[in-house]
Image 1 (tube, rainbow, N blue to C red):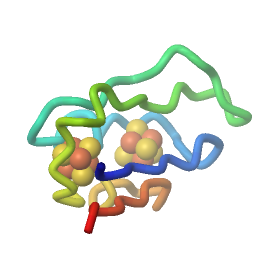
Image 2 (cartoon, protein in one colour):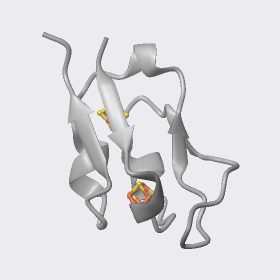
Image 3 (cartoon, helix red, strand yellow):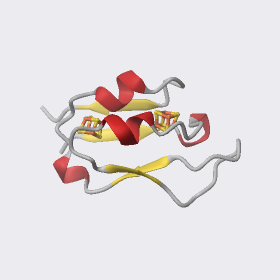
Image 4 (tube, rainbow, N blue to C red):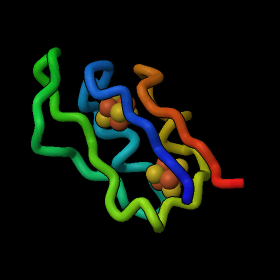
Length: 69
Ligand code: SF4
Ligand code: SF4
């Protein structure tokens, strides 16, 4: 399965990853981080195509995408 790792405390909740994910599987989460923001959660991960868009648009470089090989 593809994996998306989000560095929870790096996120500034800009929402870019949520808005640009072509599969619309990212959404702002309900847990607050150290900086006072709500990082996104991904669901369902099974639908992730590992396009890398979320990682590319994140201004905080908080996302890493791993494609299943
Ligand atoms: S890698 Fe692509 S499909 Fe997967 S969560 Fe990120 S933007 Fe969405
Ligand atoms: S693009 Fe990065 S900083 Fe913005 S909401 Fe997504 S993870 Fe957080």
